[in-house]
Image 1 (tube, one colour):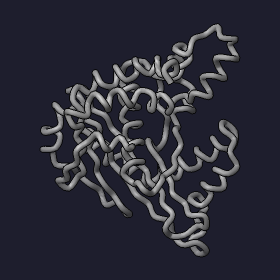
Image 2 (spheres, helix red, strand yellow):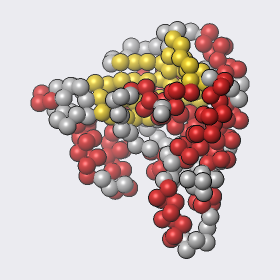
Image 3 (cartoon, one colour):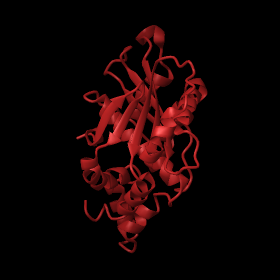
Image 4 (cartoon, one colour):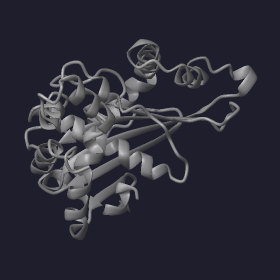
Length: 261
């Protein structure tokens, strides 16, 4: 089941997703384990646990991977939420994309480049191959700029230069940090597209704002300046009540998710 099932959808030119009141508890009970696996898998926890000869707890292992409360935690909660929402939005097409948070070196520093990137490629390259990138901004406190405008501006940066650098960064990761020749070959369709041989591939750009519902109406009232963006472009707004409490509680529960898995 997609996490989209927990949300009601409206569209005023932008797609607005509001968590259904009756779905709040099911949603909050579901996401800690799924989100934690974006940082560290069950298999990796077991490997670290055994390497330490059971002298560290699973809680300590998970804590070493996730950020402390603050802006990085808020931002990454928004990114991971967008990751799962976009996966669900494209079903039955199954997009694949790296859970890049597993590659963090400093748990309290945000990763560079495109926030969320996903792909679909046919067995043989064709113009139906798809690259989807998303810029994600989160607003959980009052004294923050309009996250919708910030996300749109980030999409423009992706379009101009950051997307190409993200693809090169991913190839580097699959070369040495997480060696995977098959994924390198997969990525080469998008890095070296060979349009004369395979045709162009499709690009989708998403500006995603994850907003505390108490700020939503004011942010929607502001006029958003949207630059000329080639390809499919969409603004997606995710609204959650008491967002700061939601993400802080989610990360606390993450610490217990391996024991209950």
